[in-house]
Image 1: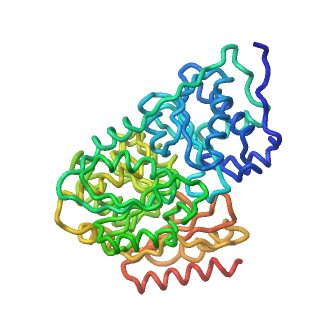
Image 2: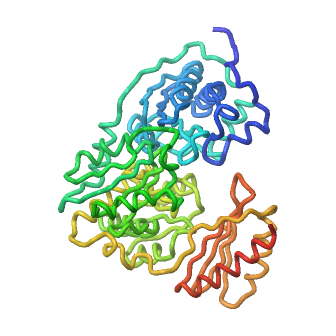
Image 3: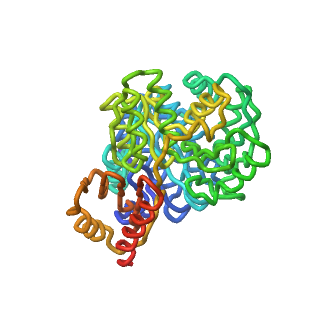
Length: 464
């Protein structure tokens, strides 16, 4: 076959590609920024960067209207570059990670996660679900696309369809068996991929499953599949109260994140979920390392230490969590954003596996969820507060000048600026993609938190 470059997207300027190649994935509006030509080019470049012409790749996609076409185009680009493709069809992102780990090949998931319907994108990983981010290969993929792509291989690869949903479900259930009392569980899939995976996994358990918005619909007719936004949890909260459920589970669009609602319909702090799962994993593997990112409640490292484990603090973001887990052989990692990572799941994040751990802990006791989690997060917290500012770095520098000299205060720059005192801490980080500054703060009591929050926000927002 002649040394012919693959067809390229209509616009591959550095500026256009920089807009869609994010820190951890490719993502943008369809078809203005992300189309099948781009997906095809990315597929070929992905094969070149991962060396997967020798071992193949696995490709899955979510329920967005554009996703099947983008997945086929990615697979076409990969086969032109010489890779054999295993197409698993409709999948959650953690199902794709399972396939990558189970089959031992790099993977690509066509999804825009929790973004609105007009978006789509591609998450990629190396073999064994090892993340492919800007610093670990994604920038190379971008640069190859910008340079005109990769030559077509002498031998084109083939596409084989394979259903891994059953294997995925059995693997998760083996990692977190659920036994004990029968639970009533409301699941809000948000018309996302949990509508595909929840019946396959939770449907095998002896529980009363109450489905909410299980119909796969990438236009999200009921609410965006973004459970970090409290507005998207209102229907779940109401349904939990209405049916007297023991717990409510909310998944994002690609179902790699999970948020909880307790039996009263109250939203559960994700740091409490991290603490609960950490306690279970430390009971199973005494003395193990547990990862937490720097905006997780300080209650988490305190609990891990109390239980004889080793807490390790990381930057925000799955590539940092996974890399640190590999370096430390950590058994578990949690992020305040609802991502939970498991050593026995190729160090990848799985909202469904996190949900199973919670159900297993709940089913093993007669206590309600609110009681089970009581005391795991005793501090008052703001959650994430975003402010639009023209120059986030200038604001961060000013905050450091203001706080660093105060008695009993320490600062670090692991991720943005973290300022700590004996009774409180706050972190400010700039967004990777927008002129936003993100504030998270925690204190020993609500009054102290309110004073801290108001002071920091006033200093931030006078720069608008």
